[in-house]
Length: 346
Ligand SMILES: [Zn+2]
Ligand SMILES: [Zn+2]
Image 1 (cartoon, rainbow, N blue to C red):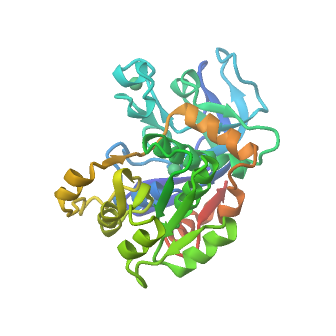
Image 2 (tube, rainbow, N blue to C red):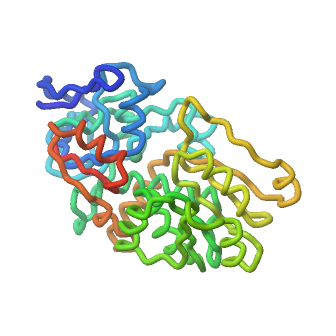
């Protein structure tokens, strides 16, 4: 098969490799679609502590089962599936308490195991056993199913940020995840969405997909003042910082309402993970700061359902479709402001 092998930092090679062959408890899928995620860009430039090179990355994967080990009873050849990449162990302290995304023995496709930037992908036994393989609803395409993964991460994020009916929610960052968060917040019955984004290009792209009540560009106006005007002077109930930017995190802490919740959904670059804030704001405002990343298998199942019920539009997020051999180009496109989601079709 053809595979995109990451041999080291910024060293990606498209090469021929033997097709994966499943042991009795494993399966193989023909990868139909794999979308490029912010993490794939990070891993390409900086590597990752759980990745030993060489590795095939890619974790937003949908495909068709082509081989099933003798011991696998629940799936058959020809079924179309989306794979939740984060595989919990099912046995540790957190798994037993239903917090699979915090699993102490978490393994991930595209990190510990080879991922979807290849023609075929092995689905390991622990992924099958722990509910990571979801059948794609009949009305969904493979590309829509690939996008269940980022939606699953957004669902986990809004669960922990307690986004509820009637809330005012601010999303900082109009990348693909910002756009998914906006739609999800609307599904949850929030009363007002405020989008904060610097790039006019991104604002334009996103407004074509989903109407947004309030858009603030912090390079043009004072965001604290404007947010006060939009929220009766109170601040925003729930804030999702959906970008990897120190300043955005600091700004979020200035516009959150008393007893509100700020979610640092995007991680900061490895070299500069520190932010500066007035801790008295927390003291007097009694607000909460959470962070989230990743998701549990049930979030992926829920994500597929929401997409299938047309509650969240994901197809519209795909701005570019490329063959596997153009993955490197795809990574550069995905990190530019010109794109939202870049899809690879191996
Ligand atoms: Zn992802
Ligand atoms: Zn566990």
